Image 1 (tube, rainbow, N blue to C red):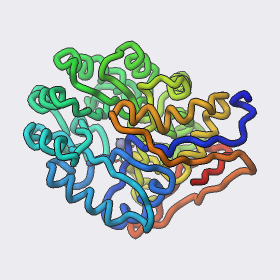
Image 2 (cartoon, rainbow, N blue to C red):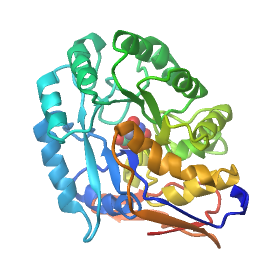
Image 3 (cartoon, rainbow, N blue to C red):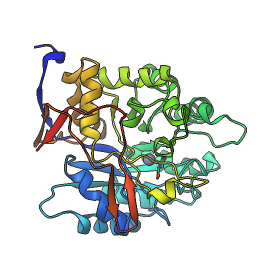
Image 4 (cartoon, rainbow, N blue to C red):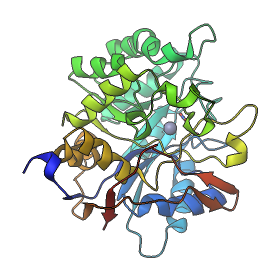
Length: 350
Ligand code: DOR
Ligand code: ZN
């Protein structure tokens, strides 16, 4: 059967290799949206204050586990927020104890709650050296922050000015370029075979910058890195459907309440946890590549993180359009769910 003829697909249960769960009432409301379909997720540490130390990560992991819906089988894989004061010994101890899976690098000012991120990359060299020694991955928000660099160029400039020098000084460091948005990033990963991988979000496979700006401004499509022109979206789809082990799903599902998004200076972030698997099945179906979906959502990520793929499965069935709620209610206010802008035909059952 060709991929286009398929109407049903059973895959190993997926993992989300880049997820924002927040804390408190928001955590309580959004966590079930992820645990419904996903077995594990790399949890972003950009809380206020951020998850910096191994003790912070233990506390946050406990709060996530306490918020799990009844019967959910889900493992949060914690990350530590890299600051210029991060202690290499604390990072190594957290990794050895299974408390932290990775460290997250935010250039200071790059995105939501990144003020404690890195300004001077030389200051974090001892941490990066130690991580390379112990094989602990660095998850990178790859955008420069200088106001003189155009926002649509910030990822490509980051690769040249920051990432290449870091990897040259430290070729043994295992790096995940998070939420890549450009052909430049896809090419960079493809050309560098050692210790490098990239996550791709659901929304960057679906929207380009016209979706945000043409015909009226759409705050719910605003995220960072901002979606780029169509040529880049196509490069991301090609990478995702290629089966190449270095590309895997990280939704970057990032809930903000509607009042926080819909204001003069609205927050960056797209909440895609509820409908991500239906959206991805649609994208892979249209591309005639359904048989590659499992690699992207369920195999390539565990392979890079040196973890076993999940044994449980998830079944996708094609039928009449499936609808998801436009919003979910949280104790902090309503959160709008990502609208792919086309009907979704793939129903998910576990
Ligand atoms: O759009 C984004 N939202 N990009 C990020 O890097 C952070 C995230 C958030 O935390 O809201
Ligand atoms: Zn993120």
